[in-house]
Amino acid sequence: MKTTIDDAGRATTHPNLILGICCLSLLMVAMDATIVNVALPSIRQDLGASISGLQWVIDAYTMVVASLLMLAGSMADRFGRRRVFQTGMALFMLGSLLCSVAPSVHGLVVFRIVQALGATMLNPVAMSIIANTFHEPKARARAIGIWGAVAGVSMALGPVIGGALTETIGWRSIFWVNLPVGAAAMVLAARYIPESKAPHPRRVDPIGQLLVFVILATVTYAVIEGPHAGWSSSVIVGLFATAALALVALLVYEPRRHEPLIDVRFFRSAPFSSATLIAVCSFSAFSGFLFLNALYLQEVRGLSAFHTGLCTLPLALATIFCSPFSGRLVGTYGTRPSLLVSGTATILSALMMTQLTATTPLPFLLLSYVLFGIGFGMVNAPITNTAVSGMPKAQAGLAAAVASTSRQIGASLGVALAGTILGTHMHKGFAEASHPFWWLVTGGGVTVLLLAWLSNTGWARDTTRHAAHLLEEAPTGATA
Image 1 (cartoon, rainbow, N blue to C red):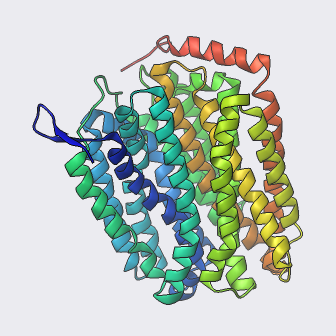
Image 2: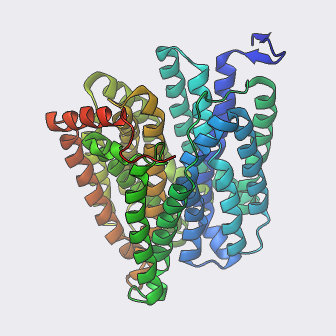
């Protein structure tokens, strides 16, 4: 690999090596999600966790990531992308080590939060490093394509590696995988990634950040704990009321800031709002699927953790194949064809899962997984494309960050809903108790189909042009 010395005496490396180092962080973080889902039944048995406890193992992570993604991006721009990247890697490794020795499910949830704090500084910052490394549009598009492929491969490897480790060594070993990968990434980043900062970093918005966290935390807690505390209890009603008040406060406060955490003017674009809603629907379905599937295959079907990973492989392979295909389709024909395929495949898969029983034939099950993988694989490219298309160049990064945050919000909501629905109907048996969730996913697929049409109309394109014009102006009544 060609290496030269810059004016500051630091080694500068071929952009592809920098891309590889950044992809290590993606490999680690993306694999972590599917590894943990496969290990949930073992965690439940070893730590005596309830369904809600397992929900928190997943949602404590995704909720923190969703809350802090945009803050991490602005911190990297201000303090240095390599520095924040290395800090995030160190935190993620520390969280992983602590997770592997967690004495209880409550301890595991706390340590997953430490992991999440590190994860917020990894993928968004790594993408920013890539964007500042590859300056030519064609080279940048190729790098982002490789980034997407690594995400798919990570998802495919996660269940298989996680299942094998859980079955042979134990669930705690799934967190050990992150340690050598993270250590290698930290050393390579220190040696080869040059430091970079934004010339004019965005101001931190602590009030906006706090309001976003309050909204996500209260809604997630209320949905997960509602069945146990009672939906009409003062605690749950108070949490939902707090979330509503925080949302109103966010909508009133953010338009008055010169550099808000979330610029609400984005949502005046119908395609952008559609992309946000599609991201929430799709990632809710995906995270809920992973959560329920691991429990169903192991606790109802009696499969081992390793065989559970193998059963999930068709979904992962379909996602790997469809993700780049969808990207090419979007580039040639726009977002509508990809979204139509995604919505249709999701609906077909969810309808098949509404027939799920304890003895559903395995080929029927695997076919539904393949369809689900097609639906999920086809949706990522149009979400990103729709979010940034037509927006001013200076705002494209923030638009992409909002889309990424929507994905994480969806992931958190999906697990919360899946576990809550399962717990409410468990008296019917596990498979039958999951049916309402699959009907909910069917509705999400229908929503994707409707938005595929709506977001590609002439009226929708006009709203994007209007929103782009507004974004080039300072917010009314802006404050520092």
